[in-house]
Length: 172
Image (tube, rainbow, N blue to C red):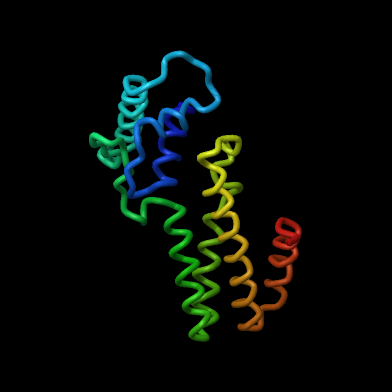
């Protein structure tokens, strides 16, 4: 459900850190004036999300709870945003060592993980804006680094369309 996706999105944005019940309630019901809000309603959303994760073959224990709230307990390899950023770091490191082919490969994989605006469904929600902006900026960085790697290895014809697309999407 939308609330389950909002809960998961909020926990991913704050991966590894406890998010308080109050913050989660505010995030999940941000644009809703429904009277059923609060800890009990949040527990229902968490329970349903855990059930959905389990039904999809995932581990429901990735949504951990304690007295202060909830947090996502997942390996970085399970979160696209973490994999994306890791590949950008790997590509940048390869590029700085002059390994343009390895850099281009890592950066191609990073760019390939980016499938539209991050948290697009929740673009109107305050909790998603900063992370969406940050990830979009990282995408622009990845495209720039990829173009640099392609130019370094002499693949100018591959670099130019990428740069044109990036300039169109990020004119500044």
